[in-house]
Image 1 (tube, rainbow, N blue to C red):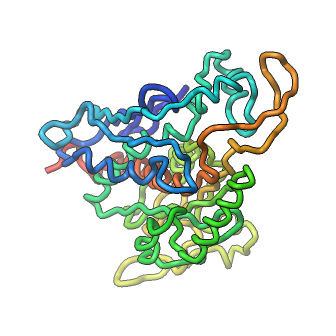
Image 2: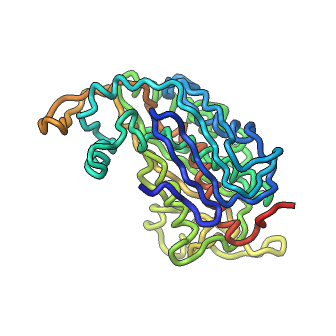
Image 3: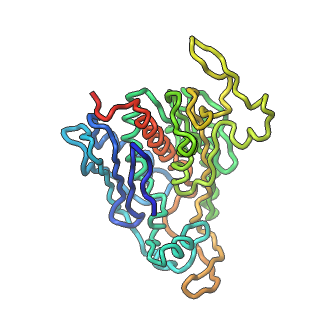
Length: 363
C-alpha cells in the first residue's frame, strides 16, 4: 500500500475501521506552531459519526491524542503523531458475510491483491473511517495556512439530483454547519434531508457533490509538469473513499463552451491583475493564479445498502443473495465535507512550504 502523501509537508496515515485506532503522522510541520488537542478536536467533531439521524449511528467520540511532536504547547519540528481510538466496534455482522463480495466495495479487489489477508471488518483500510486521520492532519495544515490568511471552505452543492443555488462566500461561511447536510442553501438543504430519509427508509442510498474553495492562495503554487497544483489536489481528493470525480472551475461543462466563452479575461483592479470570470477555477498551467481555487468532488451513493443484491461467494465460487446489515450513512457526502477541506488544506500547505512562504521555524 501507499500511505504517504506530500513532499515537504508529508502525512502517513494508518489504522483500520475495526482495528484498535486510527492515526496519522505528520512530517515536515515547522517548529513553533502553537498547537493543542482542542485545535484538532474542533475539526474532528465535524466528521465524527452518530451526530444526526441521516448519518451512521456508530458512536465514536473520536477524542484526539497528541503522541509526539508537541512540547509545551508548540510544535518542535519533529514528527507529529495523532491518534483516535476505535471504541464502538461491532464486527459480528461482517463475520456473517465475510466471503460475500459486497457490491460497490473493495472486497473483491483487496482480496485478490492481498491474497485474502486484508481486514474485511467494516471495509478495513478501505473504510471512510480512515478519514479521521486526514481531518487531524488537515487541522494542523489549517493552522499553518491561517498564518498566511489562506482560508479553506467546503460545502455540499448537490445530493440525489437536488442542487443548491449559487451563494456568496459570506453566505457559505455562515450557513455550512446550520444543517445536517452541510449545504449553505438552507431551502435546498431541507429537500436534501428529506430525500436522504426517503432513501434510508427504502433501504437505499444517495450520492452527492461537494464544492471546495481556497481563498487567498499565493500566485504560483504548483510544480509543473508532474506536480501541478490541480494534479496533486486531485490525487488528494481521490484518496477519500467514495470519490469518483473531480473537476475544477467550469470543469466538464467548459468542454461545451467556445473558447471566447470559457476564457477568463484579464483585468486590473486596485492595481492588481485579476480575471473577469473564474472558469479556470483559480489554476492556470498547473499554477495558482490568485483567483479563488474552486473544485467540485463527486461522491458515489453509499454502497452498503439494506436492499437485497446478487453477489458472489468467493469461497464457494457461486452466486448468492446479500443484504448488507450494519451502521451506514445513507449518504456519505455530508460527513465528507470536512474531509474535503482537510485534503485541500494538506495539499495547499505542502505547496506553501515547498515555495518557502512558511519557514521551517516560526518566530
